[in-house]
Image 1 (spheres, rainbow, N blue to C red):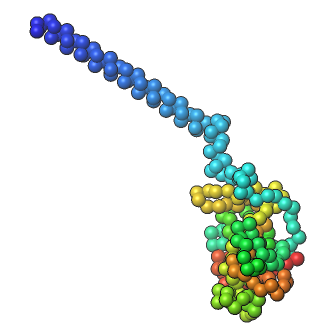
Image 2: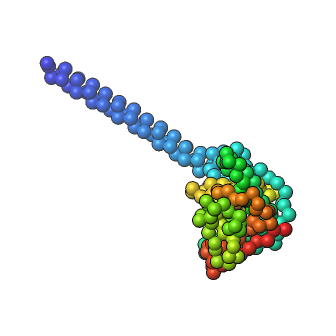
Image 3: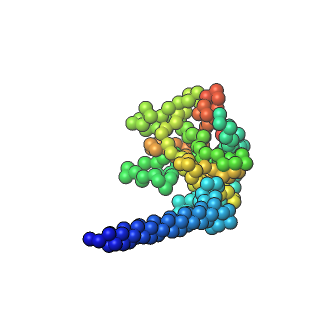
Length: 239
């Protein structure tokens, strides 16, 4: 091959390489501009996407969720008592009503034996002007004599409660929001109460009680050391 053809071939390869480099540079520039534009869209406070992210990071109102509790008016309750945690969270509790029911919570499994379970409703309020974790300080107590013999070993006494009273394994659930309170929301994996929110909470036993248990014998106490430093249970009176 002549030197002319070899030189022409080198020029064509060089020009082709330059063309590819030029195209790659143009594409990189376009991607860079798109990335910057995308960052502007995400970060602009008046953008729709930015607004949604703010709601998720703060007190996102979960009231549109199918699982969000409905709203109701404030019920008649006993005297509210205040409790604080070591982290500085503040709550008030006020007992509403107590009784027995074969299916006290939506999550309760109906017993084929026709058993009945004890429950207490109370008002839980976040007393702070900022969100706090949704916690359930209230615990349900019943007379040990009203617990079937097969479950009596699971019924535990606590200091500060009458000697004949004990608490069975139980579950708590928010059953309603009071007034304009926003629904609980998720923040970094924790369920939170919005500032000033008030909910009705029901705590119900997982194990059955005797049919002879009277509503007035079902009581609500707060005894956990997170809320009561001396671990002596505090009773919340029904209205």
